[in-house]
Image (cartoon, rainbow, N blue to C red; front, side):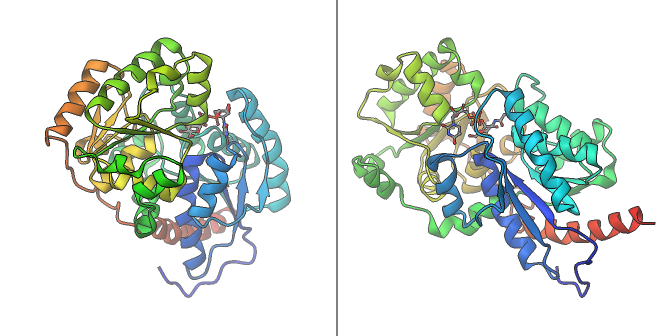
Length: 390
Ligand code: UD1
């Protein structure tokens, strides 16, 4: 939204925090919308370094045309406590030095909560994008991150209307919440035309591109949730059922480093040794988009893929007992199948028989969510800081 007002000289920049892979596709459209807003919202991009290697980080920065971070805290991997504490320790001096007007965090990773906690004790306003999503499963580290971040955040932007109700139930004042839609879908829509065709992705990785021409199509698989991949007794049956599914439809499995490490640790590689299962390293954004857009079905425990498949109209079987994104089930193409091999088989058979969900694209998943955030945040910051200086 255009406005004649100028960016007030007394307001510092908006510190935008990214840490892990799923943050990057959310932040890219936000930075672009902040730059395009009149007046532009000045930003400072801080990367915590939670994800750091080429596959998990650099390729996505390139694909999404994200600017090089202004500051990288380089925390790396660790236990939850260590990683969270290290982000906090390294982020505090950044706040002191930069005096931002607010800190904007996205999603639900450890970096999201860590930076939020630092702000709370320094009276720096926190803005949370993708607020209010709840799986109601406290065994999920992300659920703890979501609940605590939302309790602290001053301005909360939601992707679906159910999030608003969740927040109000937790005592968050309604006037702090603003429904803007889904920035992840902003990224998807603006990049769709640049997606890398699936056959090319396979060819570049040294595989036979004809896999994607199977008469039944192909499936895309990702798994990385600790609850699915950290214990052999959970991971082995899942891999075994994937092997069975691959007899019906070839599978392209993009392996997260956590999953690859556990497959090696438990010596489960033999379960996936089939020419109908293509094992790829973590994919770039444009490669993954091409794989998803052309898929017959997706099997995954990812949060983001539930939304992306809904936007693309591709049936998704979510290998989890719950979801924090219920709209993907109610309106989209998502079905929860849990970890039960029988339910997974039934779900796959339905899709292959042509009875998969088609769904519709939810409200405000229209490519303009970041624009709405820019317009609202500008007005909110002006009002918030005027009130504070009174
Ligand atoms: C994190 C997020 C999760 C998100 C996921 C996407 C939390 C609590 N979890 O989980 O919500 O869905 O990112 O990937 O924040 N590793 C690498 N290279 C990297 C980063 C990690 O090899 O660049 C390996 C390390 O061995 C590390 C492991 O992956 O120990 C897990 O990384 P970590 O960031 O702890 O959690 P994720 O499982 O990626």
